[in-house]
Image (cartoon, rainbow, N blue to C red; front, side, top):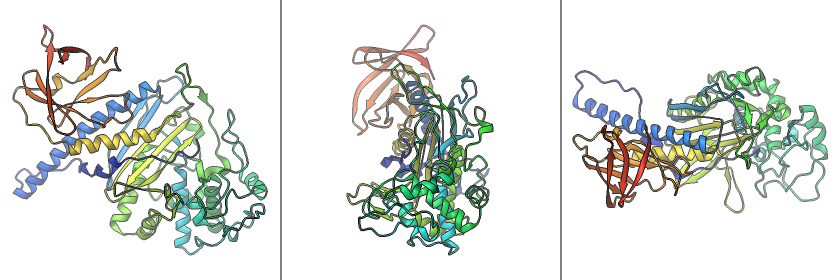
Length: 497
């Protein structure tokens, strides 16, 4: 709820196996160019298999969890190498989701607010360690007897200022989700007490990022939404990203929202909300296509060193750790969640607002990012991790040698797991087949494979490379595969892929 900080696994660290899509081949290339083209073709084929697995898995996740719509995208360097929508976005369940479907991205909004603050910092209009009341005279909380350093922009951007989590209004309470206006927030803050002395602990705060947005408005002389649109969204070409909710597109390009899954397997409808004064912290809407573009901008800026919206050095500073909680469990940059996962820095944010959840995860050094958005209260972080893990697994898989006469597509399909388990998939994977469980949270965990031996015979190979038992596919009178036999028992193929 409200916070939805992204979770991540080490999988994102090796997304660099992805490929320069659409590489051109000279009709008579020199040897080095030919080798490079061959390598690119192999990587392209590997990525295609990985993304086919991703598509099957996400659609399975969506169906098992009864999520109406999911959109997802993968960015590599300057390019979006894959993007797709799943399910439907309207109440009638007829409008297909696409990468351009708009969702509330809630707390991912904080990244745009942080960029806006750092633009003001670059211009010398703010400093990060000056008391925030120097810019917002009204932002003075009620007196607190505990000794504390001042509340600053650095504290707000790192959630270490000790501020209350929320402005003192029940805007996360349905069915109306009555967000306060700017004037209401300003009038109420004087009666709110700090939760903790500043810089003593980490406490996520939508109020803190709201104050950061208010600071941008105060020092720039422009309304916050106008400033962000003119100085961030338009220069980056993010045409489907807004500091607000496009009510005129609701039920059309913008997905309608649904609540958490109930015991009867249904999801209640959720009313559209107006983020009002909380917009800098939680009010943006966007498509995953735009979030992938945002990720590519961060990679391009860091790589080129050329100023584009921000200086490259400023972005690097935002994506390093500025605050570590006393228990060493939570680390935060300036607006960005920052984690060290197996030696790899992963940055980004998640979002959860009434009827919508989203996640944006980026590995700056590897220049890879994953964006996921949905119109239900499920976990997009699981999907983002699963996407990354499948790409990682395919990139690391050592291909089996081709066997003459074996067409892997003949064996691909959905196979019955009943009564023991849900149905599973067998899909082409690095010269063989692999199992994929569409209801599994970690689709790449223990990816055992089937190595072709010839005809309809395969050998099980574990994720550690150990060769195990032999399995045989069975065909019907028409020559179509209809079952797989393993350990003297069979599983029926429900349908082909």
